[in-house]
Image 1 (cartoon, helix red, strand yellow):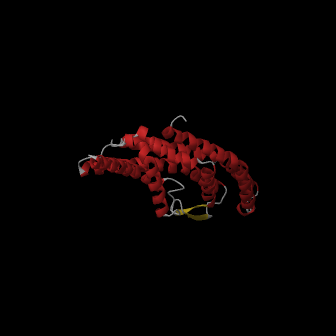
Image 2 (cartoon, helix red, strand yellow; image 1 turned 180 degrees about the vertical axis):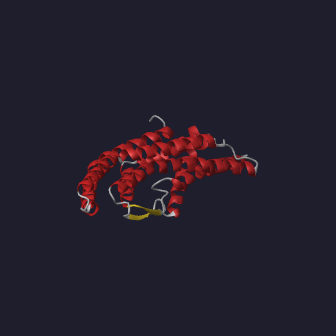
Image 3 (cartoon, one colour; image 1 turned 135 degrees about the vertical axis):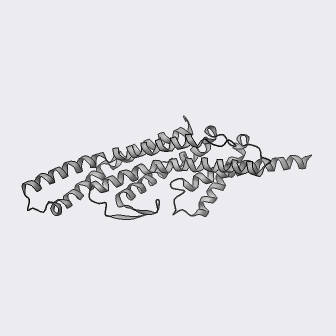
Length: 258
């Protein structure tokens, strides 16, 4: 009888670990910071395994029993992986707000041609957008927002019941709304530079009409870049504060009122 109880305990613990690892591992592979390409996949795997081991005794009661069919088990795991990837993608979409703001600022300050390889997106991006993303990532770890990211994955078991395939329609609507909100936030964060660029280009146009032979473009480019840099560093603390508050508010949807 003791062997049967031992086998039941081991199987139940192993089942809970598998379901936890499927969701947590998928989230960490997509989540910003931990899931970025410059982080070793082995390190991400170790972190996912460690978190799953710690949470297994605590979350065992919420996990479904091991299904008898391989097909059912496969569907359960696919659902958990989709949920984890969805939460990680939500966090990465929030970070894209600063990428949008940096790109707009770069275009408005004549620095869009200055690009650099971004390891987060794996493509060439404007230097300003890459700079703002790195600053946001640094603040995320300094302010322990990465703990909130992990907590959102753990508390997601109250929203997405394990063993129940998630609603793809609801997840798609939430993702679309998040993309729209992040794009709107990115435009609002870049609004001072949009206003500055409009006024500056309007003045350039008036000067070009008054002095047609004067090379306005070559003369006014340097002042435009200098003023844009000064304006960016003047509003950068406010931009980061607004972004951090926005990120915390969005992640509270999964964590709850705590």
